[in-house]
Amino acid sequence: MALSRKQHNQIMQVYQDRRLFHQLERNRREEEIRLHVPMFQRAEEELQSLRMSRAVRLLHHEGDSREALSELARMKELEEEKKSLLRQNGYPEDYLEPVYDCPLCHDTGYVGQEKCSCHKKLISGVIYEGAGLPVSMKDDSFETFDPEVFDDTEALPELIRQKDLRLTQRQYMLRVKLTCQRFVRDFSREPGNLLFMGQAGTGKTFLSTCIARELIADCRQVLYVKSVDFFESLEKKRYGGAEEQEEGIPASDAYTCDLLILDDLGTELTTNYTLSKLFSILENRLLHKKPMILSTNLTLNGISRVYGDRMVSRLIQSFTIIPFYGKDIRLKKGES
Image (cartoon, rainbow, N blue to C red):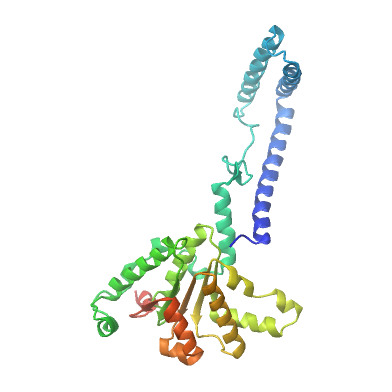
């Protein structure tokens, strides 16, 4: 998904502001030197005159004349004289050289025809601002994933009962982390969908955020929304006036973003309208192979009761279902 016009303009404004700031600073420095080092200005005026003369000579193919060579020698002398004057008056030699936030692109955003690394960083920042990730989880990433917060004393009874696996919560979550990292790695080649199921505080939102941060760093458009907030926003727009139409989460973004993360599915007020919208978004994204991550505290039976068997069928068919087991790690953090 390409940047919106608003996002593009926001980035270009950053570069324009940078260039203006540095130009104003350079003008200030030139005025400072003009006032405090008058000999510098005279050397600069003579140098400019010689450059103009040389340009005329080159235009008339007179670059090898004795006079032209003499001018070149004088120009070099003047350059050295300017540096010497700056040093003598306590200024660095490059005091009047152009200054850029990014020396690679000179604050244009491009190196040749390619986006500069600073441009990509700005894109990621703009996307992050609009992604809606929880402020409380702004520092969460795969690097901050701490397996120590998960219980490692006994095997999960659910895994023993359902899959005949003897894994502790910690061992199991390390496997889930690898699955999430593989989802990021394969995002461009094999887009898929994830369904996180489990009780609150077992790591669903944390890992969703980790995935989002990795993809945003790769300039992918990510939209993270709480289910209750998203559908409440749609209901307000449906019945609200012009002011409400401009507020809330744009429904179009849910269709077009590179990754949609719909958190806490099942907490929203379910109406025929919200059900219709949910199915519309799911079917449209599946049709166009646009990945999703859904998280819910509901079981498949619970999803069936709220959304019907059709929903469960689509999830089983099109999503990798990842159950989250064990104790609420937030309670464990509180105890420690």
